[in-house]
Amino acid sequence: MKWTTSIFFLWLTATANGQQLNGGGEEVGAPDQINLLFILADNQPASLLGVYGNPDIRTPNIDQLAAEGTRFTSAFAVNGMCSPTRATLMTGLMPSQHGVHNWLDDAKLREWPQDWSAVREFRTLPLTLGNRGYQTALIGKWHLGQPWQASIGYQHWLTFSYGHTLDFWDNTIIDNEQTYPVNDQHIVDFFADQAVEYLRNVKSEQPFYLQLNLDGPYLNPPTNTGPARNRHYESYLGSDFESFPRVPVNPNLIEQLLDPELPEFLRGMKLQSILHHNDPESMANVASQNTIVDDAVGRVMAALREAGLDQNTLVIYSADQGNFYGQHGLWHHTTATSPSNLYEAALNIPLIVRHLGSTPAGETRDVLIGQYDLPATILDYLGFGEVEFEGSPGRSFVGVLSGTSTDWLDEVYYEQEETRGVRTRDYAYWKRIDGVGGRELYDMQRDLGQHKNLIGDPQYREVVARLDERLTIFFGRYSTPKYDLWAGGTAKGSVSRPGRFQDLYGEDWQTVSESLPPFEEH
Image (cartoon, rainbow, N blue to C red; front, side):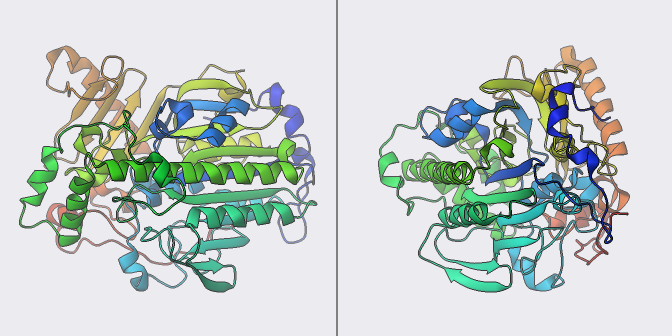
């Protein structure tokens, strides 16, 4: 279902309606078309930002962005890992449709085809905007396949060689046709500087779409363990960090460590998670990395103003997904437990939409938004609402943003390999593949922290039946057999526990990374 753009936004898209095709089949954009700056943080739950209520962490620039725009309080990642969520943000598809179910393991980089992009066979946001006259640029983290050349419609390409951040200070940069080291600057600062340079030099004759993927705060080892090397760390050291839960280590982690068949790399991650637990230095590390990201947002927004682009640029700030920082006795991702979980401490992400003079300023929207809704919304806002991401469950929330529509179905869906869930205004319900784990139900009006599983309570039997039916219908519609892990399908690149799916479907079950023909728009 698509929402039509309200009268409130008609003047914004008037120039787009008059575009014509050139001889190459691409549309020529008008110079006064709205620009798009999409800033994406890495592993940042909404709860770590001041404007979302965190009292311990300084994020004045992001707070200011929210004061000038509209803040969504109930936006949810589609998955708890970065590669699947980034794939969804580019395609509008669920992991069971685009096939990326987990982070793409850098250890397998040499095994993948040299030109492999995990989503190039689908319509993507940069390709669609590039075909409509936009200058398209990726600056920052990629993590959707091989990083060595521009992909999925990006024209300007600046990234680094890995998806997992091993060091904020020592990285190999791929800058269009050049490769060089950056070892004297924090990678978030470097990417911010590159974005500032891009905005200073972008051509004024065409609209631009800049995807700025800041590689921070990045709440994973080794970069978030213990002391941090950055300008904000000392100022946080010794803080009380009342917003960081102090609870015992989740017993599920101990159970996993006692499993003799646990792969060694997973054992190392579990041990790291325990080392983080209730550690003041790691908390100061996390806080300081968030403020580094905030610094970057401030510099980029200043460059936008200085370049005279502020009034004509739609700015979106969000994150790929969050991470735990003590909630439920966990650190790291939703895959920390076995089976994986869908606690929204790690899935509730920031979402701020700001277009000066056009989007409401200083307002909040409490409707439930899924990441798969963003691509459709962006195209609708920019005047291309007739373009569809085929098969996507995404809906444009332009009417909700403007306040002209309240007709919105308040539910979102997410999945983490063997675990699938639905979140409504009142409940969060998960289920697992048969034989892998049990079901969970949380009353989100009475138990926002998701501490009491109500699945066995007879008073909620009808609720469970109703939500289970919704979940079954949704994934029956928004899954592709090839990539449906619940029906014997495979995954692209990697999964957390491949042995689990081999036990379910046979030893021949394997992940895939074939190069598929690129999507072409006709």
